[in-house]
Each structure stands twice: as structure tokens, then as C-alpha cells.
Image (cartoon, rainbow, N blue to C red; front, top):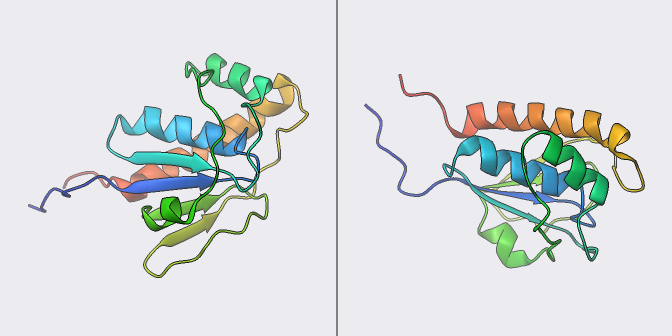
Length: 140
């Protein structure tokens, strides 16, 4: 039997404004991992609020992100994370040895209505479900 990890894996989602894709990804991972993964999101140029169409699309999926606020990306957040995922927006992250870096190519929901955000949301959910199988393998 394998030993239980002493601390949950930590995942950081990064996008320029931290108002759409990274917020959806963080919310899905937090929701679907049921506390088994520590989740963060941030941006290099965060906006003042989460995109309202993103909030609405996530509400349709049963996840309330209306209280979330965009956060500034810090070197400390990257250092404290096991996995750093950029959201296809070309954001530059500080690179540290021993971290797993991924880039998910996703359309930008900025300026889009909820109908255009839904397929982006669904694609993010598929990525998150796949990520979870890697982060939290089923016990044998």
C-alpha cells in the first residue's frame, strides 16, 4: 500500500487578467477535487473583477465564483506550487526547477457573451478532469 501524501498537491492557474479562464479552472479543480488539491489562480495584469459572463457560465455548472477577485501573480505563488498551468494567453511565469509547467491553449472569454463562454468552460472542465487523474491516482 502506498503512503498517503503529507500535503495535497498545489496547482496554480495563470492568465493575464485572472478574470476568466484561470478563474474557471481554479473553481472546477477546487470543486471536483473536494479539497484534495490546493488551488490558486493569478494574473500578471489582473483586472478589477471576474468576467460576468464567466460567473454566469459557472453558475450554470453549479459553481458560484461571484465572490472571487482577480489576484496578482507573485514569484512566491509559483514557488509554492507543484503544477503551474498557463491558460493559452502567453503569460510569462517565473520558472523554477522541480515544477511541472503546462500550457492549455484556450479561447479567451474576454468581451464574449455567456453563449461563447460555455464551450470554453466545458473544455476547461475536461482538462481539469484529466488533470485530476494525474494528481490523484486511484488507489490500487
